[in-house]
Image (cartoon, rainbow, N blue to C red; front, side):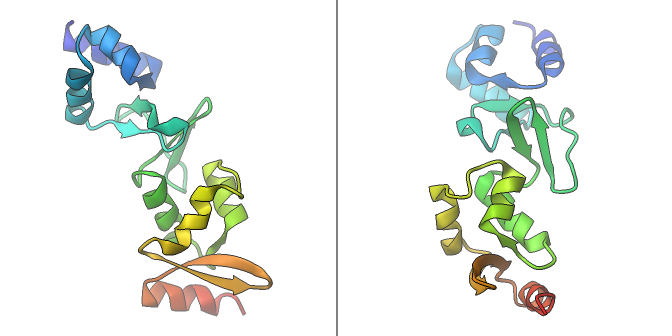
Amino acid sequence: MDEKYVLQRFQRQKIITIDQLVQLLKSSVITARRRLKKWQTFTSINKNGRYYSLPQTPVFDKNGLWKYQTVLFSKHGNLKQTIVELIRASSKGLSAVEIADIVGISPNSSFLSQIKNVSGVRREKHKGRFTYLSDSPEIYDRQKHRWA
């Protein structure tokens, strides 16, 4: 299939799954994955990373997120990288509820319970709730100072 035609269809659709791309390209999954890499596509951070978007398609918000229908993309990378960046950029750190609200996952998600062990993040109790802060000393000090 003509790559220009496939790219035009992909751009019109805004997002695509690997199965849809395989059909459009009339190729194997391996070839489709190579094209996704060549085109430097974004991978969704929800929906099990099933969706892809061309780099010129997303219009990211102030958090670096773009939602199309129910599919969420991040300019920061995968879900873990996105959460670390959201915490780093926050003025006072973020609670699990705030993180869940921003990225659209359940506050009781097992994923959030693992964040405390991620490089780049510290978890501390503040006013009876756990708050996630940056582990960078300068950012951590600034975030903690704003608790007062």
